[in-house]
Length: 543
Image 1 (cartoon, rainbow, N blue to C red):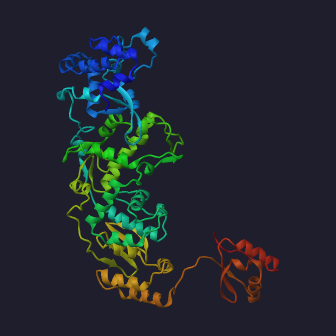
Image 2 (cartoon, rainbow, N blue to C red):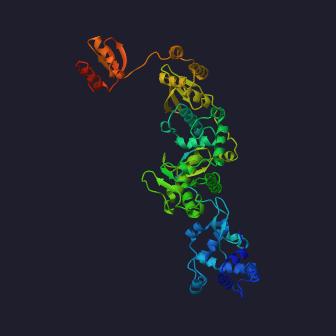
Image 3 (spheres, one colour):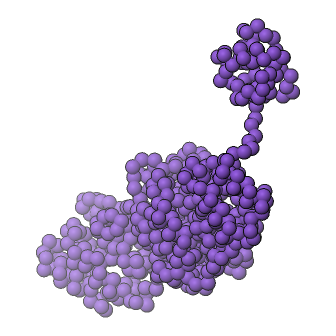
């Protein structure tokens, strides 16, 4: 930070004179460098400074202590929180004398030379800051400057009544997502429950770790390596990627918001700022979520907005269509972002336990988990279950796959099957002709499925299921179900003429010389064609 002499030099001559008078001195020539240096020296004399400091109005004193504590604050945020310094020319200052008649606690500090305003080249970008000169900061008694405390407050016992401890289900969801995308599923078809992680958010994390490309194509080698890695190491890898990623953008993942325009935010800097605040929360202590967010809004609201700009980011509420511009929409953007990071990402990745005051309601409290320390160090936590469970296969082609079946095995099984969802901590898959067709289209051989089931099933496959797979391997499809309408004629000539007509394309299959299967919904077209051929017909279906 600049020193007091720098602040004096940047003021206009009449303000320098006013500052000197406030401290009980005078300047014969306010432009004289030697006089300014002497004035600075007198102000910074310990006894002189303490006498004036103690005489400051309490509101001004509190602002000074607050600013010394945090060293600097963006000017927009500072003036919004504490008040403005009126902008005047020298003529108006001479008439109004704001140094003698300040309108706010901030103006008191300004005309005592204790508050500065300047541009600093600090992350995320250069902007105008409020500051206290370095040599003035050194004189503010340490007893007056509080230790930086955590934002928010402790949670009450009631607010932490129902605990939702950390888990490693994000690893299972990763396997489910990768298998679904590899099989051609759309995001909306993939449900990731307990915890409910949005597939797009998880996909963005997997893009950051290079398992997925930006077009959501899988990197086969990295996918296999991740799924084969033990659970503790795999979780630590995802957590470390999130901590350090420049590309993972939490803001853009907030559901219900539409982001327009070419503006850019800085997700890594924002993440570091939030984590810095959270580090002040003591271990083994439940913390109230709402109070933390409210305190951020009061004390550090512009944590992701360069220069406190709430108008240049075009963010629209999807449901109402309204643009969320201005500080009045802070809770709808910044507030939601903080909740998403604390109750979403940091819980899914194992950093934070959650709790609520009513069972199965939105979290009201959080605390550091037993894994958090190691995850911040990039190390795998301990105590993870081993993936050594077996698959249960039934004669009707249903496979019950526990979450502790090796993930790489479940991923491969899923590519041969249709997914029927989750039930009692098991993933339910079914072998069908369609699923085997899709697998074959991806170059997969049913012999590989047989090999997987032979190795990882609890018991030998039922003979009927084994025979079905062997027959598929040899003959492919042996039985099929088709939906259509049965067309019956009294003379085979009628069917022969119909096959030569323009309506031939509506006939699915000739079953015999007097019966055909036609497409549902095409009966009237076939009926019209028959009339053209000289045959009247009747539709007997009961629809």
